[in-house]
Length: 416
Ligand code: LLP
Image 1 (cartoon, rainbow, N blue to C red):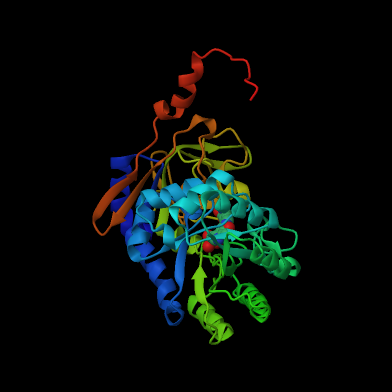
Image 2 (cartoon, rainbow, N blue to C red):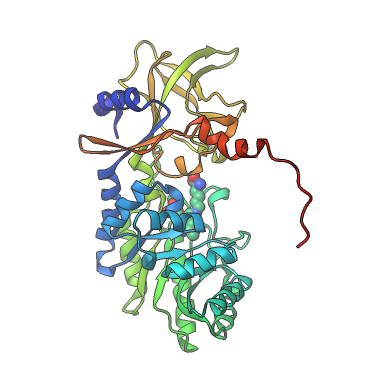
């Protein structure tokens, strides 16, 4: 969304729904999804949107209507997918620490498969499947040991990361799985990191995973699908990002006639640039060394700058009046790390609206109640129509779980 074309709309949205406000554009969600299905058309992939990027029910519902599957990492995300009308049969369950209750929920719901990350997890899924008298479809997440060359906190495909089964242990892990009565081995997967700006690690991971597919086939373990995870980066500032057509071409060449269904788990690249965060300037403060633009959004609404030193473009809606000056854009939270941007050139004054770009992914989904702040509202724009897709949280909602306990008496801990 470019601010200058949309300043009237953004001003009206802020006046109607208040700030901070996440604003998403439906056409941008559709375009991003179609960019995948078009680029990979020859391979007819199942695109499984990674719910963690933005789990808003209306966004999930939109992707479900486009035909998307889902990648989930918790029972809570499965509940979201089901509540949005998503298809469990197109949902894959990733994550290193699935609880028994989550496995049971997913098996009963009929998920497409579990992306399994360790031997103890295989054993746990087997035990739950035995108890329920079901066969659990599984894929093993293999750590291909390639460097995604991204921020260390969002790099997952190196030996040192907690994710996946070590490449050198992969064959033994498949043999272990094959010996378990209630597992149905259907696939292999990897996910090497997020916000990748270079295509080569994605291609290298695919190559390494396919070597395993062939070794497994030679042992009689025939897989039905390969899932290459997510990770394709987006433009936040001026970075180069992988070209989907080039990615698809490279994968098609590597798959080379094998009968393997391709699955992908994009998150950020489907929603990141479909959303912005609108925030109002409360005060301009001149510090001794720096100027501060104090806004009503904070690290609890967008924690990426504090956590990863991430850059989000920030502009004044309508361009702003007066001379531009350099300032840190900060929130009201009592932390020095509470900034949305540092050393930005902006023309703005108290009362102006700022738009923080590329806030569709890992923004509302990572929001918290720190400093007892209510979570912001979210709206979805479709052409000239707008729909509130999450009400602004109220302080009553925040307090309810604790208020219910205020009058309760301490109890002795029961031995059971
Ligand atoms: N599949 C798995 C197993 C994942 O762990 C992830 C992201 C994805 C798919 C989606 O990756 P994407 O296409 O969005 O890159 N909070 C961080 C990003 C953490 C990503 C975690 N896993 C951020 O704000 O940059």
